[in-house]
Image 1 (cartoon, one colour):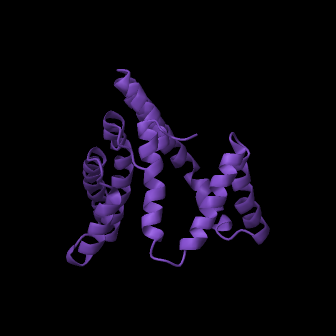
Image 2 (image 1 turned 90 degrees about the vertical axis):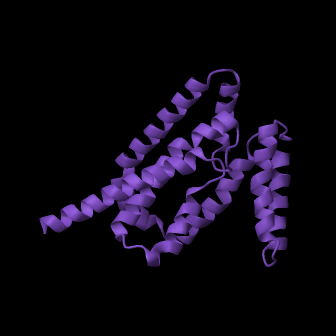
Length: 202
């Protein structure tokens, strides 16, 4: 029993080590995402002899390592993805001012703090998330209506309202058509390009 547990633990550690190296590679290579590696692993799964525990350790370690190393090319080259642009573009401005070490240190400190906070909150999340998976209808209604209202009540209220209505109408018009994927690609990509060029309209 103990030998089996030790074998499983060693498999997880080996998978985590390989995942760390893979996450470092995907993070330091602009345009290479962990989802691509995960899909490759899924496609090659019938040909692999590794255990599920090792594969899980690989994926988790790769995802964590990717978040740390992804900031380096994003900040130094100014090529963030759509999920990190709000955090990376201000850091890229520090890099342009010759404060790259400070920007990298702040990003590393933030990542470490987030990881530690998640580790501390994980037990309570495991207890509360199952109850939040199927909230009552009134709660879902309040959230779906309240969150957009909070976004609209900031600056440029009328501009935000017009964009919100236009996005809703655009989604309704293309929901049942083949244009949805290129539409979403453009909606996610254009704000990043405009922000990088410093030409956001608001």
